[in-house]
Structures are given as C-alpha cells and as structure tokens.
Amino acid sequence: MSSKTLVIAGGTDGIGRALGLAYLRRGDLVTIIGRNSAKGESFLAEAAALGAAGRAHFIPADLSLVAGARSAIAAVRERLDQMDALVLTARHVSSHRQVTAEGFELTFALYYLSRYLLSHGLADLLDTAPRPVIVNVSGPGETSGDPPWDDLDLALGYTLSTALSHGGRLNDLLAVGWGLHHPSARTRYALVHPGVVATSFSGTYDLHTTALIDQLRRTGAPVAEAIRPIARLLDDPPAALVSAWAQGSPLPLTKDAFDPAAARRLHAITRELLT
Ligand SMILES: NC(=O)c1ccc[n+]([C@@H]2O[C@H](COP(=O)([O-])OP(=O)(O)OC[C@H]3O[C@@H](n4cnc5c(N)ncnc54)[C@H](OP(=O)(O)O)[C@@H]3O)[C@@H](O)[C@H]2O)c1
Image (cartoon, rainbow, N blue to C red; front, side, top):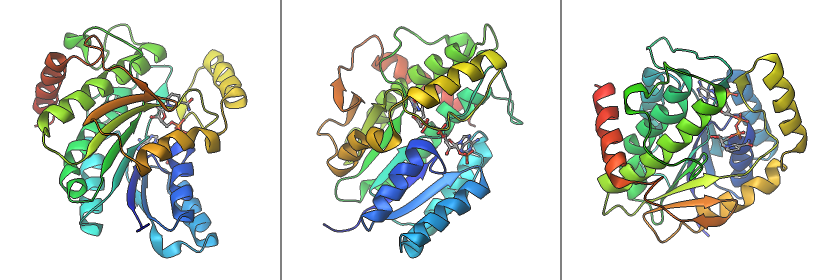
C-alpha cells in the first residue's frame, strides 16, 4: 500500500492525536494543526520515538480565529501539493459565552467557521489524490430543523449544550453545502459521531460542568477503540459524496438535519461573514 498524506486539525490531543500517531506507525505522512505548542512538540517527540520524525509535522495555529485558520491553510499549501485526507477534530467548549478577538462566538468560530475554511480551502489539494476524503468528527444528526438564522453566534440564550448541538447542526449543513459546491469532486465528505470518548474534552468549564466532564473522561470509550471506525473511513472512503456515520454505522441524511436549502443558505451567510 502506498503511503498517505493526512492533515489533522486538532491533532495535538484526543482523537486527532491518536489518529495521527496511528498513521505515523503505518508509515504515512501526518501534519497536525493545533494551538498548544507544548502538545505539538510532544507529538513530534513521540513521532521521533516511533522513527517517524521526517514524516510528522506540526503547524501551530489558533483555529478559533479566521486569520489563524487562513494562516494554517497557507502553511499546509506551502508544504504539500496533494493530500489524501483532511481530518477535522478541533473543538473547545465553554460553559460561558466567549467572543474571539474577531468578534465571533468561540464555538461558532472554532467548531464551525474553521471547518468551513479548511474544508473549502484545501479542497483542490485533496481532489488530485487517488481516493481523497474529508472526515469531520462532530455530532451528526443529533439535531434537526433550521438553525437560528438571526442568532448564528448565539448572542441570545447561550448554554454549553446549545452551543454544542448548534455547532453539530452547522457542521451537518457544512457537509451538505460542501457537496453542493463540489458536485463532481473525487473527494468524499464524511461526518462522524465518535460516541463518548475519554479525551481531554478541551474546554473552559464551570464547577458543575467540570464534575460532569471528569465523569466522561473516566467513563468514555478508550481513544484507541474510538479511532477504529474513523480509520476505516480514511482507508476506504464511502461511495457517497456526502455521508454521516455514528461509531461505524451509517446515518440517514434526513431532510430535517441535512436540508440542502438550509445548507445553501448557511453557505451564503458564511461567505458574507468571511468577506
Ligand atoms: N470526546 C467525545 O466524547 C466526543 C463526543 C462527540 C463528538 N466529539 C467530537 O470529536 C472531535 C474531537 O474531540 P476530542 O474529544 O478528541 O477533542 P479534545 O481531546 O478536546 O481535543 C481538542 C483538540 O482541539 C484543539 N483545539 C482546541 N482549541 C483550539 C484552537 N483554538 N485552535 C486550534 N486547535 C484547537 C486542541 O488543541 P490544543 O490542545 O493544542 O489546544 C485539541 O487538539 C471534536 O470535534 C468533537 O466534536 C467528541
């Protein structure tokens, strides 16, 4: 099998990191993008211990900023002229509404906008690979109906769980919109729900939520187990241009959660926000 080139946004921890190391062990080339330089260096040290120093690369970037996502895309493009897979795992949740220096709500900016930018901004590098795939690890199919069009960055009624389910819904529509804008792409777009996995759960939590998150860290599935169905999609991309999966099982793209009209509308609003 010839080696693959993977780019993992959010590869410094959790599912992204575990996938990165698994593919380095197989002999592939892995570029991770993350915010925490110490974690990036630790990934590179582990790569070196595996004898894969020359196949691992770390791009430090704050993906919650549009400027950060754009600079990460530029850094990937400077380094690679083709890639087989883009894996999207960066997320940071917060008990309280936070606004980035660019004025966007943090979850909206990181969980949705950065994935929009990376998915569209690296599409051409993927499409010349033999069997390219974008794997967006999020929470597909968990919500339905229209997003709050007049309050996309949740200025009204923010809670941590609203922000998460809202972000999941926007990613469902991102996938559908990506398919509508790249109808003849060779690249497949797969949304993946990993289930509850014992990871770092990057976030800023109040006391009550900290206790809940600690419990998830103790009871979630081991990361090594959670990455298996994701690796299957990376190794053998689905036939459908856009698909959604929960722990290895396909999810139906119901009109309610994956509505093409809503996806077009979100795409247009996002383009406007980013100009
Ligand atoms: N774990 C679960 O139970 C679960 C359940 C459902 C869905 N998911 C989905 O699975 C994906 C991966 O989750 P996980 O639990 O593996 O994640 P995690 O352990 O919380 O790691 C999150 C990653 O995002 C990166 N990140 C956070 N803020 C960033 C920023 N501003 N700029 C760049 N990178 C940033 C972190 O990098 P630094 O550490 O370098 O900051 C880290 O690499 C997420 O998209 C999540 O929606 C997870």
